[in-house]
Amino acid sequence: MLTFKQNIRGNVALGVNPLGCKQDVLNQIDYVKSNGTYEGPKKVLIIGASSSYGLATRINLAFGAGADTIGVSFEKGPKNERNLGTAGWYNNIAFREEAEKEDLIAKNFVQDAFSHETKQEVIEYIKNEFGGKVDLVVYSLASGVRKDPETGELYKSSIKAIGEPVVGPHINMQNESFYTETLEPADEQEIADTVNVMGGEDWQLWMEALKESGVLTEGVLTTNYSYLGTELNHAYYGGGTLGRAKADCDEKAENINQLLADINGKAQIVVATAVTTKASSVIPFFPVYCIGLYKVMEEKGTHETPIMHIDRIYRDMIYGDKPEYDEVGRLRPDSWELDSDTQAKTKELIEQLNAENFNSDMTAYDTFFKEFSNLSGFMVDNYVEQEVTLDELKALNY
Image (cartoon, rainbow, N blue to C red; front, side, top):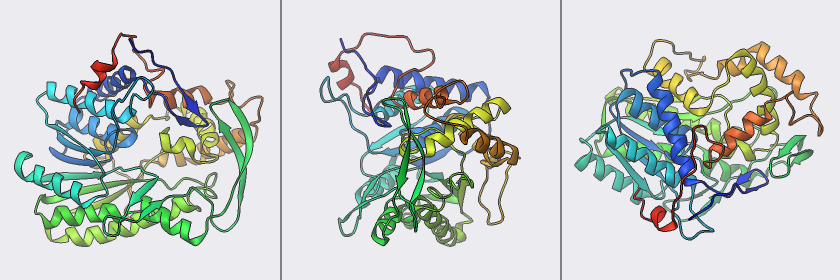
């Protein structure tokens, strides 16, 4: 029988608990169901569907709006007792199993979303087995590398400042340390490569392929999650390479709106709030911002996990009657984070942090670490330890 051990290197999770991942999916499903059903899309394609916002979106739309879904993600299954695969592999399986229990279609494409071949395979599936058209396309892909589908060139993103170095506090969850880090500025090539990986080019390529193939409904909506942040993290986020990539998504949204104009479609940038993801955990300084922000928002009753945030976005804002837009038309569910009192209290709290108190009751370090652990199936609420063999895990079908 297998035993599962949480293994962290720096702020990167290496271990996985497949059974814990399943329970985490069940917990998210229960949260959505507890809020009841709502009228939403019925045929949905989610690009980047296996974890965090993408997974939460798929769960919300399936179990809240009754949508059939296609999920595209690049994950790995178990090989041996030392390499049990990725959390997203088991998330995909758990989601499909639960959706099919309710007679919902839940097709998983586990392959490279950047490739032309994957786009065409998904399109053929939509045409032949998914009713012919989709009414919502969600782009939630998070990757550090991207192979150019035309040239085969491999681009790698860089999380760096632009112009000047940034110095600030950071956390290492492996050894629970608090230290000062310097984030060096990116050169022009690193900026360009980051935009190539994390910008909106692939989103636009997907929408062009889908439109050309005639698999988009009249009035189709496509969403892409962004993050703009605040004055407290602008130097290393909005003002850094990540910010350049997000700005490129804004530009591509305009292109997609023109592309979809003749079918009354819309590209919607959703500026989401700060949440715990595998990506956010490795952004320099960002975990410090989170443990301060979460503490303040917990006290105000406004802190959200990805499933809570996504449920509010789709139930209340996109398909509900409580949308909040900014001056350029982006949806702004991050308004709770940007609340002036919340930001002032977060700034005051962060300025008091040091190596002795960062992981005390003074902050929400425990919340951040638990949410980080949940991403790999550890510290999951309602989890009951069970026996499972490697062969049983290998027999699971995504």
